Length: 150
Length: 150
Image 1 (tube, chains in turn yellow, blue):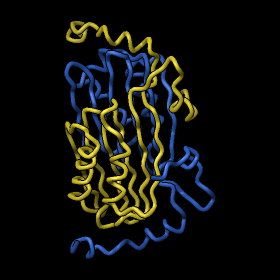
Image 2 (tube, rainbow over the protein chains, first blue to last red):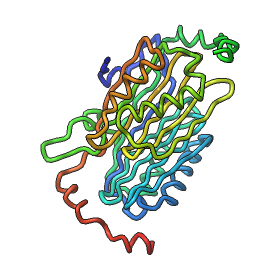
Image 3 (cartoon, each protein chain N blue to C red):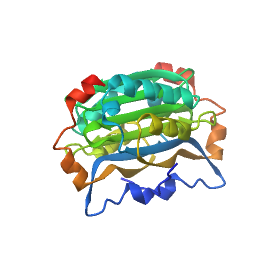
Image 4 (spheres, rainbow over the protein chains, first blue to last red):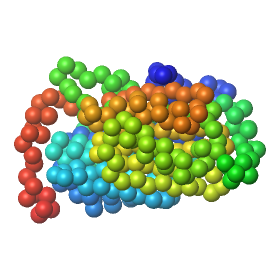
């Protein structure tokens, strides 16, 4: 098992590129009623995806008993995920986007506002740090026939 | 906008507890055919959830054209998410679990094996670091009537 220091996730070298940006957001002191409404949470997550320019592919949301909502919006550029603890006024949100078109921090600001979070913070990690050499290989797609046969 | 140092995500003080553990896994040099099969990716993600003792609530997976799979398994304990780049042999996987029942690292080892990843690493962040005082408040649930009326 290889545990990486967090620096590994954030410091591509000159010979490397990264595929995605992953914002891990912590929203504290939110409006509990918003966090416990599946309709509102789903709407705001979808709107957050659109606000940052993402293309929505699929979504699924679940309301827990007695309270709390979990949900994910899969976007062409990766995903947005949320878990809420209305009784604590807290929501854990992931905003993972690939490419330069979307800025996950736009979604962060949008949701912070919609959830009326009085105390919020985030960190951003780079995902898929790979060498520029490997990226060149991607210009020669692997054999499609091999996939079909496998 | 409050950007937090990564230490904020990993060092609860004596007066704090955390709600969840979030393993961010990077699987490199995987079998590209596995990563490009939605059926296999979905099966392994579901199996990974079960392997680490999670309760599956919902799932949604999407196959991209010409290749790549994105998917999420929502579990009672949070979620497992994946995005694959078969052409690069890379998969970004999130294993976010709450409570002490599930160990996300069990799912990490399981998937590393199933994807035949020759180079993998992960980092773990704590989500929802809150004061023990706030946790006490959760023993007094917020007004349900207020939710219904809102």
